[in-house]
Length: 470
Image (cartoon, rainbow, N blue to C red; front, side, top):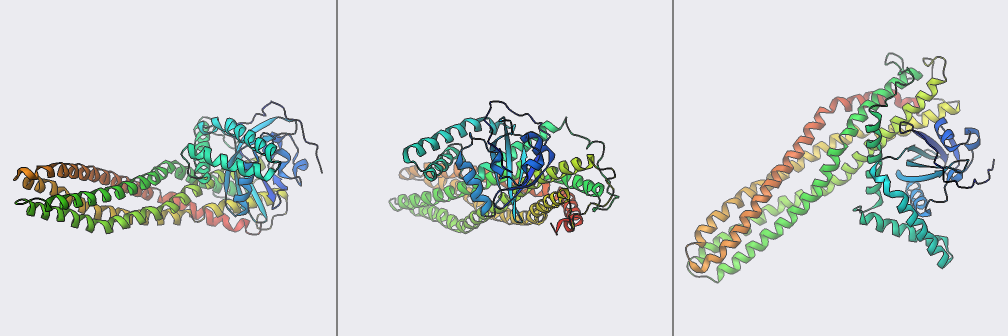
């Protein structure tokens, strides 16, 4: 079925912050399925949407570079999130934050209403990108050139906002949108149309499946609340690693300056030379621990990002599964009858099986990921303590050095070196103690979440077999 493109209208189609919707497509982007909320907001029936290319809802205000970026990510098998302005059948528009995930033989897109402060600048950013693309295409006559120019401008814009790459921005933005949604839902939490399912029912029934999804949702909600700690920890890793490297360079330079100055003195110069060698030797001994700390901090970056993205994606996915199950329950006479997901026959069962399979794929390894992260943080904590031992040794040097420098007038210039060393060492000790405390706090917090992780594992296993044939 082919539809004429509607004429854009400056009229926003409203939907509520508690509403989530999804659609699935084949590898070429043709719509396979979606929920009723998607159809209502887009202004089409599901029958009108199925089989159509997903760009049936593309708004002409969208920069091509954003869609190019989306396609590159998902075709590489990676999840991607983006703000998208869509166009409904009547020409009206609606903004979404979309998370797009590769699935078997296609893609899944989950959308929520953007309400965070991050979104406020997006319409103007996109307008600037679109104008830039159009200007380049007008000059060159080549659409490809305009898309590449748009991608370059998008990268520059995000860099100006402090994001090294788009992936950092997208998870930050998606997290902000979900946090904004969670805050708004505190007073809007729906009862599930009076039906939440029962853990007494087997997971193969709609009621049992809904109950387990509700439990998984609560667990992921607790983990999502821990995202702030994970993100802060990631930032601290970068900061402390940079600080340690700079500190090591400064100490080595102080040792070299002290050795040079001591060689030019007589009398107390020999004693000060010993002190200078002490600084250099301690610095060299600390360098191995510093190197291990740096490597450990770098190696933690990837599992930290993976844990954060898995929690964010899992939370959004289980929310949309719940939304879809409630939608089904509202139209089902007896939600305690078998709901076939091992061999789905209806479009509803197929959609639900795909949602569950994608959700489980995102979260299945999450408990192990967090346990491995805890183990690596303990290793980092050990390296921090090793550096702290050397710092405590260096704290003694300024006291000894000042005594020796005071013995001879010509050696008084050493006083500033020792004062600077003392100041830098004290700062380092304070930072290391603070960082070690933060790491320990996070490890303790993870231990308190072990029951949540065990619940995730248990219920994931219960429902995992239900969607394997999808």
